[in-house]
Length: 122
Image (cartoon, rainbow, N blue to C red):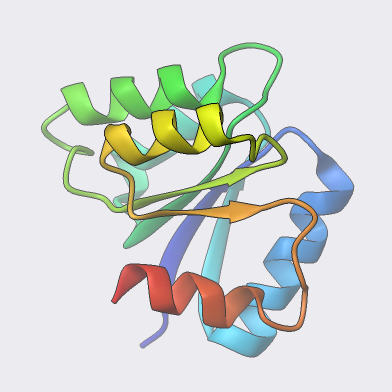
């Protein structure tokens, strides 16, 4: 049985690449959401094994969405990995304090993405 991961990212092309990488190389079933609101709803109803969350989205940023996930009993125990281009030291310090499972920098290596996700979740 494959594990399920919820990808929440507003960039459609990037989401397609991530989904393909995780399905083919990581044996994940990938659920996707193009907005934070849709992602929050899917996290509550689909109960994925993990969430891959873009930090910069137009309707609600990933940090705010992560806080909403943490405040909900149905989603607070789901491990979250941030996907971000914001990798300045100040950003890294903020991410470290959140309690996320990890951070993957954009651009990422498509060939090792599934491996990175697996390492961060173990």
